[in-house]
Length: 98
Image 1 (cartoon, helix red, strand yellow):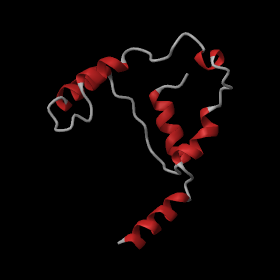
Image 2: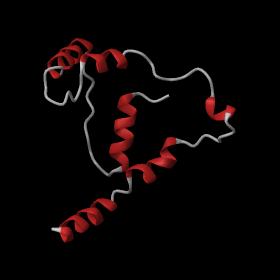
Image 3: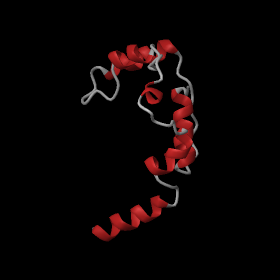
């Protein structure tokens, strides 16, 4: 099971980014959620905060029941996020379009 911190760190590494991931104490996270309730587009909300307080991991191995062989997330990240070198190729394509 991965924490949000683990997921952010793995994603940053896959993208070749150096990012500092700092924990936010619960009272500050609750305050952030309350403030974001009033931000246009609601990037985060009190409802999101409450949802994060409960683990979102099922107790039944649904993959096994469906006959699906599990794959480690580290193996899938390159396909999902791309490779660090892909960023330059993507930027070159965007520049060519303009």
